[in-house]
Length: 112
Image (tube, rainbow, N blue to C red; front, side):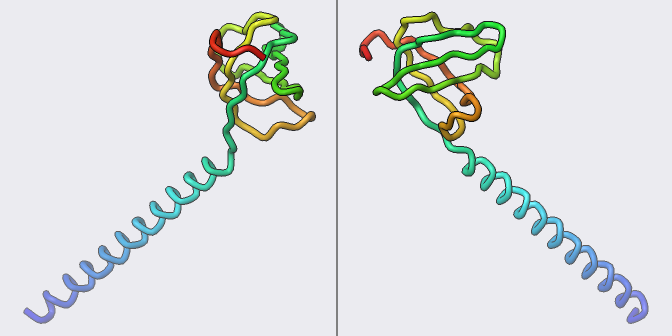
């Protein structure tokens, strides 16, 4: 009986250790995914569309005296020039590349 019990206990111990290792790996993967999501800043701006480039799927918006350039990543309709819109975007505003526009909504309640 002792000879049978020792290998069984050893197998149970190995299985438990393997399970703990997988659980730790899963926790680390979730933590990395959360950190990645937090590292991409999101913002919203309301302004007037001043320029649209349908070939590049980009548009320029002026809000509170500052110019923003956006690119549409998904197949949504580009806004029209001289309309006031709300744009939800991802990224940090800088002049090197356009921001990723995630949502565009026509804003009829505010004017720029």
